[in-house]
Length: 175
Image (cartoon, rainbow, N blue to C red; front, top):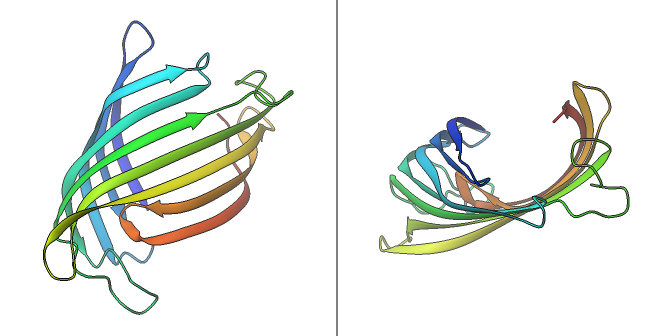
């Protein structure tokens, strides 16, 4: 679960600044974290069909955020969060899909990756790398709703020790 408050400032030339606060928890509320985040770098490409950004997060965490298995807690990762993330999004034109990014069928592929600082089981510090990939095929069925098929695979904060792989079919808010 994630709650965020953010601010986007668009500037001349198509770039923007993006920053804010995020509070995250595991679904079981076993662990939580609160971070301040910012995108210090971003780039649009491929006629605005591709987007790249770097994200920095700094904050605090508490509770038992990570698990080694269903019944075994991971080693204490410490109470400080320091994370650098990369983000890439792409909406390739494939026939009629993504011909117009405002209407019709749309397909997006997003890749994210985080490197964060953590304590090892012996108490020493180290960094680890965790990727996440998702893609979505969607169509707006009205001004208010869309139907989507979504695939997600990888690791998501705050539990960067748990690998997920899931497919979702549903109805959501149009965009």
